Length: 70
Picture 1 (tube, rainbow, N blue to C red):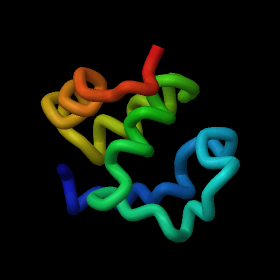
Picture 2 (picture 1 turned 90 degrees about the vertical axis):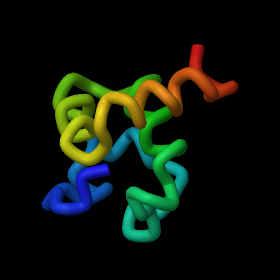
Picture 3 (picture 1 turned 135 degrees about the horizontal axis):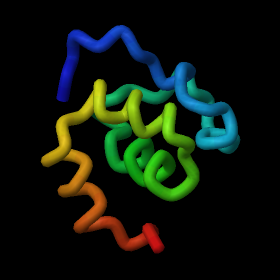
Picture 4 (picture 1 turned 60 degrees about the horizontal axis):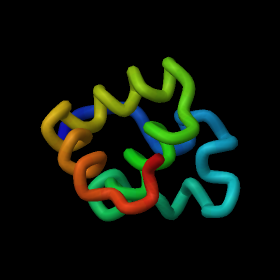
């Protein structure tokens, strides 16, 4: 995880987190939710932001273990 990132959860497309308060999302604690939503419903800009927050191995780990991704 890149903790030096200036990206916040509110920088992602609003439709990704329609059901949660983005101010409550923390990248460390909410990694699974954030990665799953971007992979499932995100746009290219969301993917680019995701890569600035998490490294590829972290993203792949969530994708491999997720039960909710199609």
